[in-house]
Image (tube, rainbow, N blue to C red; front, top):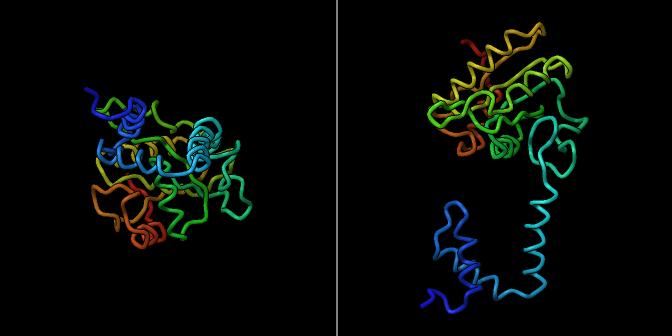
Length: 204
């Protein structure tokens, strides 16, 4: 006997339940909610997801999500074009933007170096970061990675790569107002904003 009274209902629940952190009971509740909505609302919901997958891509410069070739941050004339904040993921960009304390550019690595998880420097957008420094005349790089062993390892690797450049570029890291072991995205906006403002010179 099927768990659900409808095969299509069960398939929809399975799709929702495949999302991270989504249990089957919660998935069922969302599916039943959709069934109560109008056809137009459900169609708009489905179309939004389809367009998200087909049309949203990564900015060719910073690897943030974007609807265009260059994201709005990279293409903005109002941002400090000589300042880059290096982050682990796209959620960190959103967290820092919400502080209202930063007006430079970003570079999304897509992770941190973690040998235990099989993630090395070549698996991240580190080379593309280094390649930006001289052509874009970058004067200041802020390392805003998690205050974890993996984050510190990645900081050190980037610092060593930066030290090989002929360009004069300051490398700093966010102040340790962010608790050790915390991810950037889970840090409150006030603490995160102060950590960026009070950043310190990176020393290996």
